[in-house]
Length: 270
View 1 (cartoon, rainbow, N blue to C red):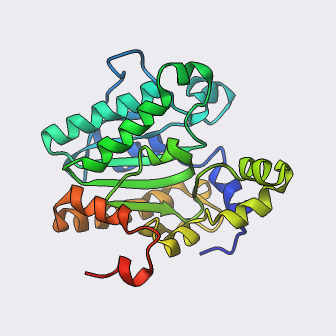
View 2: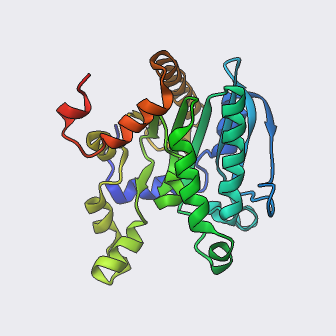
């Protein structure tokens, strides 16, 4: 694992060229059929999802979608979903459960959109109900944190049996800039905040928040996307095989999240 500081990993996680959900779907899945809309209000392009095949197995795949330039960023709201995005995700998850398809999610968002129009349309409720739905799904769920996993906007797609995380991804309750601004009234101390927050893949693996750290090319996933795709493919394949073998998906997921923060010996007890 490359010896980067937490702040450097934040920068890598946010790199504009870093592979996103659409790239992983194109590289690892076949027969992808996108499904749009929440059936209540509108289509939210900041979440991409649909049905596909992963190594021949029918699955439901979805994740946050960021743009690579200003025009794309504006189109997908910089990867910050509104309530319609989370309700779309719920629709796809319910469909997956109905047809017995595993759910695979990709997380890469600075957080859910905090604007007044999103709040007016039920942002908090949409996130909460997505968390509740994922908690009880009777199909296996695997999550890959590919870039920036920010707050409830990320967690809403990450209540999974296996949470995998790319080496230079980050996952936290808020951004380092927000942390520094709140705690020290100085957003310029974001590098210091990044170290204190324990938001790197290595930190989160130690804390039991993620199950596996996926290696990246030395300069980051954007430097050699094909290597990143291959590494994610290996981790997903093995993780899905393990989860399918364990069975009792909802109960195992419950035990996993209830065990977070417990001493390592208790988390690893049979």
